[in-house]
Image 1 (cartoon, helix red, strand yellow):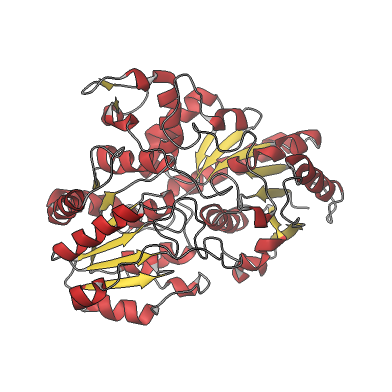
Image 2 (tube, helix red, strand yellow; image 1 turned 135 degrees about the vertical axis):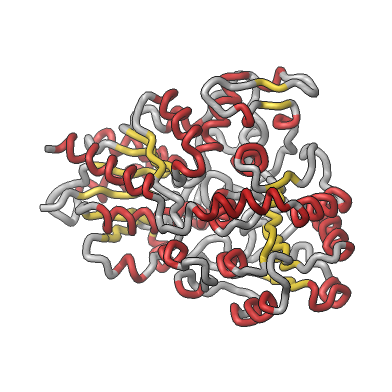
Length: 490
């Protein structure tokens, strides 16, 4: 009988999608049965291709009504009941647990099921959090840099790295889903120190969450982040496997052709069709289009959106600008941020009224969801103004599209530093992100990004590594995971 592992994801879009791909890779490269433990609220978001896989199984965690009383203890009891009364002959030999779901660790420990911590973000963000804690960079003075033993010199900590604006998160949304998902916020809530740079002496939260695990899995690969994987492994003293990037199967099979998001992502509200986007892109010169998108959860302030609109109008650059409902309003959940969830009722946010008429066919403004992989894979796209969320960052790098980084919170700052300082495939939108980003900042950034041939060449060189399919180092990492589990249970 094949051994079984289970996966417990965090229920946010940037966490669910990589988990689905991890399930795909595990069922295709190992003989394990894989069970996904997921909230019944999100059962419709599981791809049909997974549901048809005989090695894949879906187990639903009952969704509880939103209430402050629905605590981690109750969630743990529900999980324990599911695992204790398993519908197959044996319990899992291992659980892969998203680090955001660390409340479950005690349950797996009680049932003697070893756990592997799963990071859906990259290795650089976790490594830099660790470095910032160990190096006490808040003591840095203007102009001073601090090298970190074990990390590349180009990732030395600087005074400007610490100058980040504190960002107010959507209610109960950073770290844990909104109340309608039935999952409460992390212990201690979202205190002042949770979103900005670390306080003096604070250790990364994930260190506690991986203490009792047998290994770590990270959504990355050696070609992008080997030094950061090694840095983490040396500190935690256990295996750390880069098993990504966990992107859709079509991404690895596209061979330089345009990818159609509709083939693997459910339709979401938008004012344009994929055909209209392709037609618009086809009309633009190669490498001329700037793609502007901040994802579904966070973005600039209303005032900064106004500055961005003025910059895009002033530049001669063709652009696609994706604007989510609720944009510019801090603390406001955005429409359609979670796959399979009901649409959030949200206040109307910023929208650049009249900009489309003023720029004419030079600009395409998308309200709602955009086919991002299609846009990034099209030959006309030459740059990406992005918040540097990990999925967006990897999607751009894999297609050789340079980035103009405008990080908003958390790991996005570290992803931006990776892009600008280490990989050298982009620029930062402002040297002082503690201040409002202005029209002039954006204009200068766009001009530098779109006019820099060296940056374009660097991006092209890295993207070539992704054209041979899913990285060999990540396949080897999945083999190492399989060997580790087999050794423990032979």
